[in-house]
Length: 368
Ligand code: AGP
Image 1 (cartoon, rainbow, N blue to C red):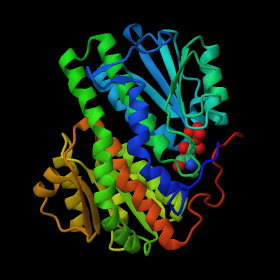
Image 2 (image 1 turned 45 degrees about the horizontal axis):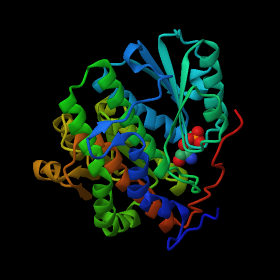
Image 3 (image 1 turned 90 degrees about the vertical axis):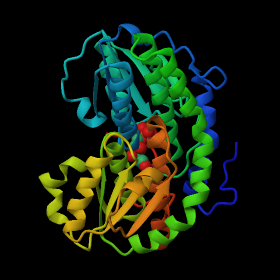
Image 4 (image 1 turned 45 degrees about the vertical axis):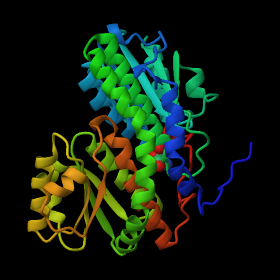
C-alpha cells in the first residue's frame, strides 16, 4: 500500500508523531489492557528455565536492546549478554543451550544481525526475533517472532521502531519476571498499568514540548559538538540521542554514562559544547545532578531533560530545561525518547540537511 507523509514535512516527523498510536497497537499484542496482565509468550522461549539471554542488534536496535538488558536483569533476574552484532559474531562468546538469543531489527535484513542469529542457531540456542518486517529473513529463521507492529518506517533515522522495540522488550521482561516468579502479581499489574498509560502520556508530551524544542534546536544547530549524558536506562538513551543527532544533523555527538564523565570527557567541557543531560527523577537522579554540577562548574552549557519533580529539585542554571510529566520508571525510556528525537529532527531541519535520507546512510544495511 501507499505510504505518504500526510501533513508532515518529512517521514521522520510523521513517524515521531505516530508513536502514541503505533505503540498502543504494539502493546495490545503483548499485554491485556483490561486485566493489566501480560499475555503468554511464545513457548519456544522458555523464560522460566533460562539461565541467561544473549541479545544482539545494530545501531538504534542495539540501543533498544541495551535498555532491555536493564529490564530483564531487574524484573526477571535474568543475566543478559549483549553486544553489537558486528562484534558478537566474532567474539567466540561461550554460549550454552540453557540461554536463549534475542535479535532486534526493524528491517529484519541487517547482515551482521542475521549472521549472529545463524551463529546462535548453530550453537543450539532458541532464537527470538523482535522485528518490524514480519516477512523478513530474520523473522523467518527465528523460533519465535515478536513483531513490533510499528508500520512501515521510511525515515532512515529510526524513531517509532525504537520506541515500539522498547515497548515489546518491556512487555517481555515483565512476562519473563512473571514466569520466573521474580515479580509479584501486584507488581505485574502496576507495570502493565504504567505501559497502558503510555500512549496517552506520549501524545501529551509531543504536543507540549514541540515549540520549546524547535526554539532550542535553532540554538543547537550553531554548535559543532554535543555531549549527551544519562544513567541507568537513560544511558542507552543518551547514546540514542547522540546517534540521532549525528545521523541527520551531522553534528558530532557522544553519548556517555554520566558516571564516566570524570574519567575522560570532562576534559572537553567548555562553553562550545552543550551537554544534554537526560535525568528523570528516578533512583539515580541525585547522582546525575552531581555530574551536572561538575559540568556547570567548568562553564559547560546544560540542556536538562527531566520531569516535574526533577525540575523542582534542581537549582542549576541551564541553557534550557525540558520538563516532562512525572512517569513510572518503566515507561520513562519511551517518553524521554520524544524530546531527543524532536531535538535531532528540528536541528536537522534548521541546518537544511536531507532529513529522511541522510548522506552516506542506508535504511537497511544488508552487507557486512
Ligand atoms: C538508526 O537511526 C539507524 N539508521 C541504524 O542505526 C539502524 O537502527 C540499524 O542499521 C539497524 O537496522 P535494523 O533495525 O533494520 O536491523
